[in-house]
Length: 147
Image (cartoon, rainbow, N blue to C red; front, top):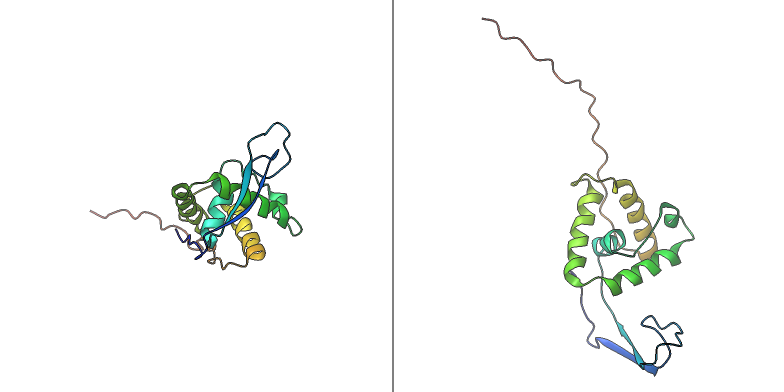
């Protein structure tokens, strides 16, 4: 996993009350919270894996169109908070297996479209997905062995 921390790994914000873990207003949350920001450096595979496989990162086909960048960034933000580093590495490996066609999956078309959106939004370089294998040669008929 290519996660790295800056020399200043955490940025600490002010203490707030009546907010939930996401910083949204929540009147029933009385415990004070402090905003903590951490920088991670993610590869194409790590972003794709989190968006494809993190529980709760729910993207649909229509979310991959231009103009839905905020939805994709929000899903990645949620997936970053929900996914530990071991699972993130597993998700990245699984995502690349699906994306490149090394693993059969009904997610392949979605993964390729999501990969294009990831490249467009985040500017990371994606490996070129292989073209589907089409055979133009008819299978050879079995030949009878002459006795």
